[in-house]
Image (tube, rainbow, N blue to C red):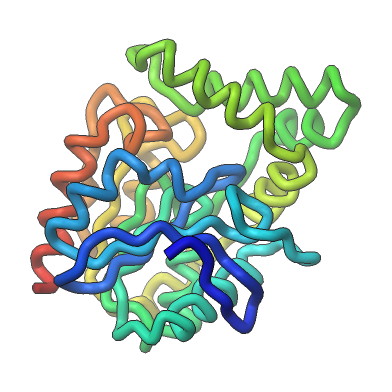
Length: 255
């Protein structure tokens, strides 16, 4: 399933699994469906998995407007194009914001939420936004800062090198637009409207969405907060087995 035509444009989608509940995976700012790569096969054992490249990311063409609202409309359009029943929507960081907004605005599409390294309010460091909006040197420094913050001190250095290479190929305007969208996101007052089951997972060493924010999100949703010890903002890369087990156990409750 390389490309799906939707009312919001064409989207590249990686599909795995032939049975079980439908599971849509949404990556974070500047990411792509590849970020879920190590989890696709384990999750395919319990679900029909659809990992999407958001517009302007990976192999999906860009769109004119970037916002959490627009991305939410894109996921809703994908859901319709695939003719899915209510799906479990799993989002990482910005992807979690998209999942939350979808559950608030179109709850009939969402059976459950998997929120990884995310929060109900996603503030972004001003230095990061300013750097990405600056000249080439400033952008390079901001990218270096971001890659450093993505992983825990215990992460394999190869993961940082891989992330640095990945972000180096990304148009700075795409990442900046994503982070600006995150910075304006705040649904803390609307969490009570979400009625579906949810899983909230945060790495203990996450510097971008620290455990305090994950705990606030879990409390707002009335669910337990799952902490991955010794893990940073990218648990799908740092601790795929532990995250995969949490997600698989959660998904299995929908069978």
